[in-house]
Length: 403
Image (tube, rainbow, N blue to C red):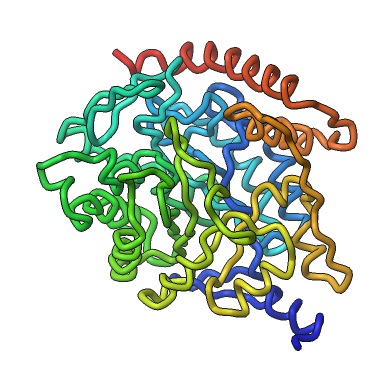
């Protein structure tokens, strides 16, 4: 039986990435849409403090979720935007606060595609979609050819602003995930059909990003183990994506799953108790030597230890757990340990739990989580009111791009 001290040592071990960068331990604050930018794509004081708290809390790396390079296709109006309108001094305030005590801060670079926020977008995806609750136009071949350069410029902007790495978002039903999924990609022009063709744009993006940031700057990627939708990405195809990624310069593969499309099951539905995608991660380990990060459903220290000790993952990604306790990494790396207590919600409406956690992130960034008492309906209302206000600001500053 493994001693407690041996268990802690597993999570305390450093991890060297292929590019030479080093994580000081095996615990990551995985990407979330914190929705804390100011509505004009710039970080706020609350966002700066939030990522500082995770760094102080011992996380080896924190990922800023949903960072946009093209403000025409955001996930939410609270996303960061890295581009011509970015205020460098504000971005440097964010990165300088979060890259402390050996911690990394990576930008998760994305494009929401068909899931772009309707009030401030005219969504486009690999193929046209017209179903209840979701419509988008098909991207032209020129639209697709512009993507690698957009991702590369965004990644270089992140590097210049002081981020210590970038994370390409190809999961959760956003644009690159849509290209990988046969349910949403019906193209017949070389970017659709076989998994190799559906993966083609991902490869082009990785290649351009690497060219832009150089060989020693960390570049990771998030992929789905499953879309959780009938007709979506299969495990066989997802494993082929891992094999293909093994042939690139990627430094970290973040395994997650699920989408935000109408009718999609939550990541926890149909999964066994514990880490949602650990069985897939074990299979992925057999086809790649690239470090793997496992994200989703890890709520206890013993689960994190098992994932790393068994070889299923090299890093453990924690999102809601680190929202409930921003000091969780320090706790799990200490003798005392201590697992977060997750709230239980009855009959939560679609998106309600996400709204609750997002408002808790705001409270963390303002150092007032002890005062956080929102019920689900109130959290949803405040979340939606804030989005509506930020949409107005977003349109005012980015409207010229839509013409």
